[in-house]
Image 1: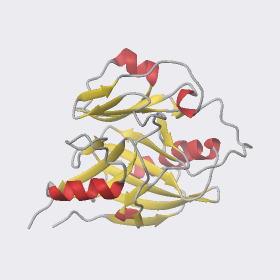
Image 2: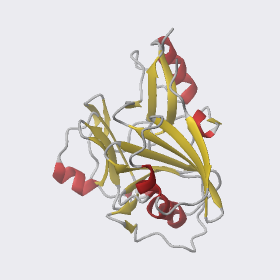
Image 3: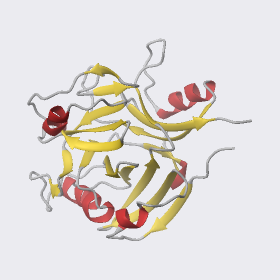
Image 4: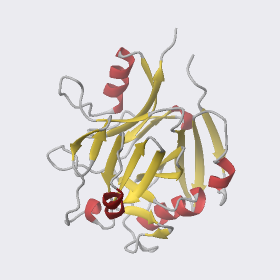
Amino acid sequence: MYRVCIILLTALSPVWAAAHAGEAASPVSGERVRFREVDYDLVKIDVKHVQIKLYWKQPDGRPFHNFVTLADWLKAQHEHMLFATNAGIYARDYTPMGLHVEEGKASHPLNRKRGGGNFFLKPNGVFWIDTEGAHVLETEAYFAANPAPRVAVQSGPMLVTQGALHPAFKPESESKYLRNGVCAPTKDLAVFVISRAPVNFHTFASFFREHIGCKDALYLDGALSAMYAPCVGRDDPGLDYVGILAASERETP
């Protein structure tokens, strides 16, 4: 029997993190939230009870590319996919742009270089999971901490850093896209968000800070973003991704 996946339809709650931090409900649950006239799908995962893994290539070396291929492969391993989303910005040659760690093994190192585009809009950052739980930290702080992640993905820019929105974000910006991102309001909880309509960086980052209460939050990607999450009624197939963050559970007869 699969775990119950809960969907809640909510209005803005400025004390979301405090209200949800101690919940003992389903380890994968979702909400659809309206914030500043844009709807967001939000999925929270209790990482102490459900493992989030990062996927790029199948054992034979072929990339998974999308959620459908990954779900089929997991099913062949007797795993049922509960959640999936694209894991951040990748290079033009379809390789990770930055740090990429699967099951404790890094297939791409931390990228501290400078460059153009959203990934290099410093500070960028890392989402990772280790024995202590889930974390988000800007890249230089991650480098200094030198953790030992089981899963890690680097993307950019940081949406929120130590409670402050990225200084480059402007409320009046007309650069609006679908966007997804992640934060960890507690070490036990990873929260993934995707907008249901184009939104600028400032509004998207404000959602993480003001609704979820995250002190650190990381942007994953823009127009290509998608999510598989029955918790919020989403069954996106996904596009041609490099990294996919996904949660699954063992199928039982």
